[in-house]
Length: 83
Length: 453
Image (cartoon, rainbow over all chains, first blue to last red; front, side, top):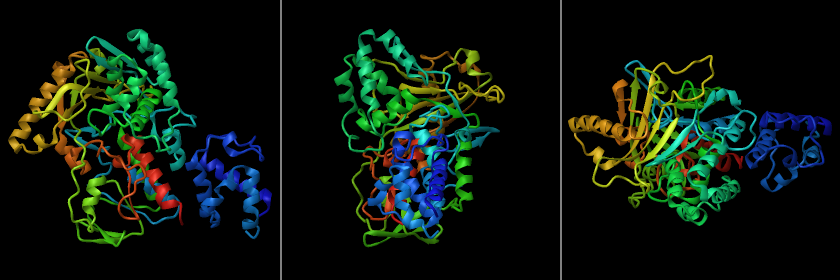
């Protein structure tokens, strides 16, 4: 997957987790939490959806990498490059 | 209900889940039944934590997101309005906190600033963070509010709808209940609790979850510090990697085959009788238009098991499922219904023989209704059918010791037990009510069954 494809996939996951959020103006460099209403349970769901959809295991110490779209895509790129 | 919520989370993430239900029907205390051609809910007066569609914060929004339901799925209609009634003082409240504020200003003008400060402090409480759960709600209130009557009136509905402890309440439980009742509020699906249960079961099964009814667990099989499976009352054995139990703390310990010693008696004491009066007209046509009235007949609110009698009718909760703002296209419930909850003593009810039991049900129906009509219009000449359930009924539905509606006073907020892979969910984990049960199941599934693959 290319970074652009990963971004689309993350947006799809976010829209499943938080269907009431408008994601069209999401800024990649800003943290998700500043822009959409996500609590710790929702963050777990980003991790869980990646595991369910792509068999990607994200260890708990790496959860901080999922703070913004830019950091998430950067973190996932080497893991998803062959998908 | 907590089990179904946990099951949906786990099945959604491809785990193999089996839910074991002791009864032939689902829901535990939040169940329903049919009698004399009428549908009755067992536990439900109201769904608490009501927030309107599009709300992103709060337990209702959180559980809808976590279970992938739409707001519309639960078909919640908000309350008309409720009240706390003490002798000579009545505080009305709705799902808009502004009404309660103005009521406090009217009845307790000197407490207006204190009540604002209380609201500010409560706004900071985070129910996902358990560090500040302990402590006395009465102490917290008396540090803020100087009029003891207002303190009693605020505690009355909060204790009635979720306090397992006698006399006082944990600070965290107080914050959670205050938010769920006063800051968010009451609602009900037109079709009652069965609608929510139906959605939960349908989703759970669609995700591949297995639900076995009439499959009571006889014991939890252990090996060292782990649970390895369960044996059902039928003798069937099931193996499991993890076990979540909504049976309660003491009740779960009793199921474990490694614990031979009886644990000290830590069971809750608070249980109720509930009467249902079916009327020949809508309650509002008799002048009762409120959704729920929490009454207490003296300035001091007493929250404990009755001393020396089967019931204590000094306080109670009156609720009409008719008095919700149902959409005009569905109209209102066919029957006018008034439900009344009264504190009761489990031990005394359970010791009655069959004929005394039947007689006492009738006797306490009359006495509790007589106590209630001091606070709402007298509806007794319009009653066409009644039903009463007692602590024995609650015990049968929940399997909680003493029929304790809100479980044991000491909650286990992280759900842990003496076994590494056995966890509690539901009432004794700490969240109560319909929304609380669902949130409990979700959070225990997340914390203990999803984090590690």
